[in-house]
Image 1 (cartoon, rainbow, N blue to C red):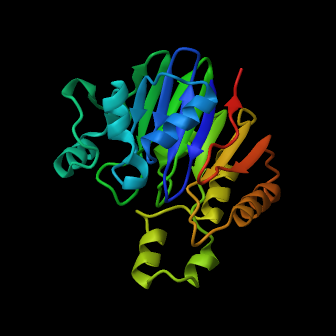
Image 2: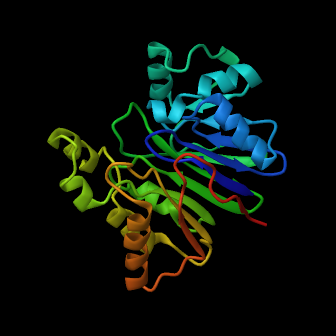
Image 3: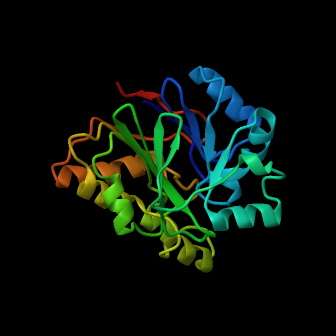
Length: 260
């Protein structure tokens, strides 16, 4: 399995997960041109599907153009599809490329099993994704106001994770955001803080977990070094060791992880 965050943050989100025969994007919140360039760097010239977590523009802005240009199936939950189609968010997608998925119900895409799971966020029907292939497990879990029991269980025994570490509590509290927006970010339908991400990792990380990316960092209310230090200090306090802990880059592909 190969795992590579192509971009992560409020300006755009996209993650590549693939095997030798199956190539999947989790979200496509960048321009088609940028995603094409990143995939070329990875040596990927064909996609098997695009998994949509939710309808916000930083997750879907490139979905429509990629699907139409390369005839790529798009997977989303029923209420996410309803929003996308009603509002024309991703333009016209041919009926045969619209695939509806349900939280808790696995689907096979090529040789990869994909399991969507509920997350709590201010969107129509948001999900995270657990992907398994070639004996490895990868999970993408961002845009979560809190961690559901289902998400917590699915994160366990993963080999690679992209987990939200959106904001530093003090930076958000004393930052420039209006109070209403601060409350939204910190709400149960908002985002995970650095502290929450560290606490979650301390609870679920096992010996199988080799790589963790901290993702969806706020440009206004976080910094990569603050996120890393906060999470690492929590892990150290709990005697948890991870082979590789890093921040997913905002505007360019991060390290490509090969699991074999």
